[in-house]
Image 1 (tube, helix red, strand yellow):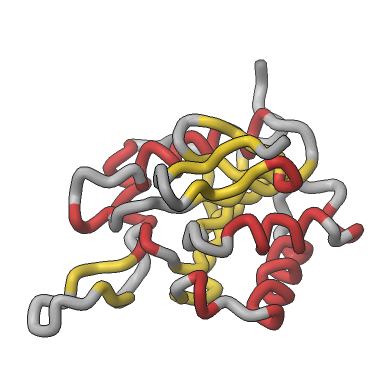
Image 2 (tube, helix red, strand yellow):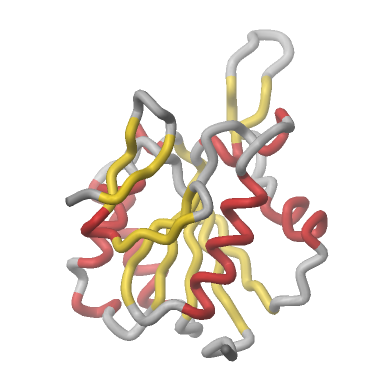
Length: 169
């Protein structure tokens, strides 16, 4: 199977994936995105245009933030888009994007991590790799790539007890 387009847009919004440990307070904070380091570590040959929209915990995400994300998707000159996002409200953002008629000609895949990349033993790189591949191969639509699975935006939920994403009925 051949990818749709050799270029891909990567939109950064924050979430656990990009958090770092603040040594003096012990808090998880944002300092910068870790996506360039993750892409270097993966030795990707894919042409990725990375754009940082915000570095936010998804619990602080607002409708205005979702509008900004939708506009960035619409403005992207690529058909394939990956969005890094916090897992707590990832489904909300995916649903909002899937309801936007201006995005029907794009393949948008949201992904994140349950543990920060910088802390090690993280699912961040695995989920990012899955999302990058899915954005190139899936049909147009909005998806979530987590836990080695690709879910349609309207058929997924985060199971907080298990710490995974699951298919909804």
